Image (cartoon, rainbow, N blue to C red; front, side, top):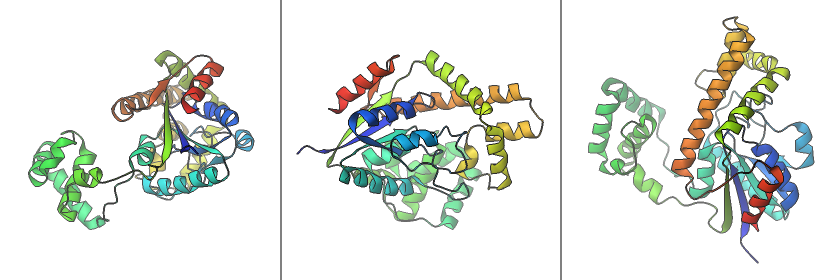
Length: 306
């Protein structure tokens, strides 16, 4: 008997991943697991472009729209749930298809998550205050003195990773580099097939434009209005969703509808560009596939799986 299979299906926003996953699941007897950090939220069906309830009836979908926007949700929590769901699929003789655009979720599957001891909030705050006082340039120099290994894997301009490396070394006495090096995937005994939908820029721009226009036909404004009533803390992940701040400004009559849709399209294009950049740096081993014809594209993906 061969290795148990897991399909990872990644790609930029509006690349058609949900439709591809649905059709692929039909072909290979699969079930779909969400790997999009915004599609986990129950408050956003339209804004996060979640699969429709009709699509969810055709093929089993997991980890979509189950989380309240009020709660913090981490990559670690997602991995724990995804692992359980993957094993359920395999026990049911189905192939799990993990689909989404959140690079960190995919990385958690392929590389594992570092099990660093919890660092107290007061200690983390102390490091952030130090960073505010020094600025990134001096803070990075201080980090390299504290942990010379950080130079191997942290860009001098990467604020988040610099902060993380500093607090880890200071409070665990072990370099983040060493923690990462000893981390292993939970899926070493599985065959992981990694496919990235490498949609051409011209097609992606067209898809983004039509998706945003479609959102406004589907009462996205009401969805955001209901979310704003929850008065969720600005630093919560859900508040970072593209479209919330723009529609909020529209509701406050700062912009008209045309300007609002244009701003959402611009931000979505910028996000897609960041996803491509991430994929070039972190998804080098992934098979990049695209074809204008959906049947041909599915054929190419199936070839990678069998």
